[in-house]
Length: 417
Length: 112
Image 1 (cartoon, chains in turn green, blue):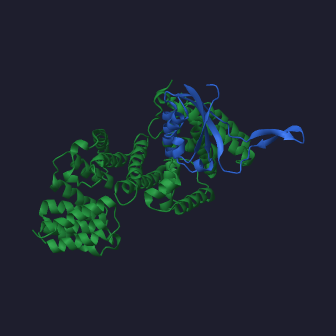
Image 2 (cartoon, chains in turn purple, yellow):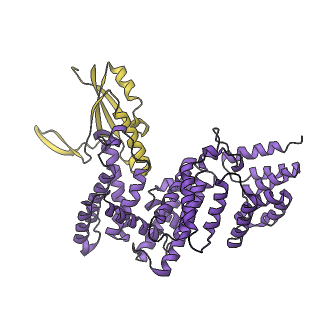
Image 3 (cartoon, chains in turn purple, yellow):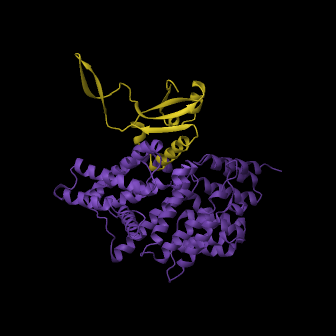
């Protein structure tokens, strides 16, 4: 009896991960224009598992079972949907041959990993619009359902479903292939892939609204994809830098809220609750990221995260790093984060001056964190009434319940003593 | 100890929209339940429409079915041990099937 059969528990996220790799593998065999058929076959296999395993018990090798049943279902799908036209017999033969291969065999595992990578690269093809890339990658590579994606992005199911339909239409009409791009195009596409992964990570990490659990899954899934890239032959140093940032930041996830679900600021966090495994992983990739001359934004972000992870924070160094980052990426969010370091090094008055221009930036309009930082700085300067005004305005912005409680706590601190 | 049959009815369309992660969590819950010491066995009924044989003008005839009026179909069954009906019902109360919108019919196996 397998471990799963004894305990009734499967490997964590097994279905989600298998869903991505089997879809990728089937899509390569069927052709990307038949992505729907591949997805249906995988869904069918998982549904079959859901219907039979509770009664019959779990199979010895759950992954291999899903792989085999999905293949058989794909063969049915090819016949039923008239997939592949004249090439149908060849496709069926190829599927049948592939069914006999066993996941777990090292060579075949490598092939599956390559299929997954090709799939991520296709999802980030320039012909597919930016917003659709993230949704498509979450759906096909990461095994999220439409509803889960909608929950993570506070969108409605219908909007996400439409985005996916559009992306698949683009795949068909541009005849996108499941091939790795070559030469300069590879580097360009790699950049797009990393952007999608980092975007996904940040969406999960930034605690706006939405469900905490699904957001954490988004972070860990982004980290998994980053590691997948890092383990491949195309891993350039900035890929390791990306993995380092994500791992070092994700390590802090368990310490970000207290037992009551209230937010804890970085400097007040209980470091013993940081995930040491992820910190070690982050530093391993950080070390590998400094091979070579390239200094990307990911490198600077990783260096900042590493400084925080080392314990006693060297704020002047953090400020230097933020100066570098701001020079590379003039985003107002980076400028806002930099202001926190300015306050630590040069005092709150300087920091207030630094965020002055941000108040009129349209990208930060209605962003509670700008108001919260401003309020925090004013409070340090004992300008209590002005600080209270900021926190009150911040409470009017879109933010999560824990953030709201945090702002109310700060507002209470503004009471004259 | 008497034996009771738990007949599990389900609405198959409710499962179509589940994500892989949700399906895995459901399987784990079902499996954990089916490992309880009082569960003797369980079987899944295959999905294709079965056949119903009934007399038609005095002669037995088979038709595809059963197509029930309701959306719920009989999906599978477990045999469990319990001292009496109350205990049998008690033991099915925490079955995850109920959380996923299913219905459980509890029947005593005569003579056990």
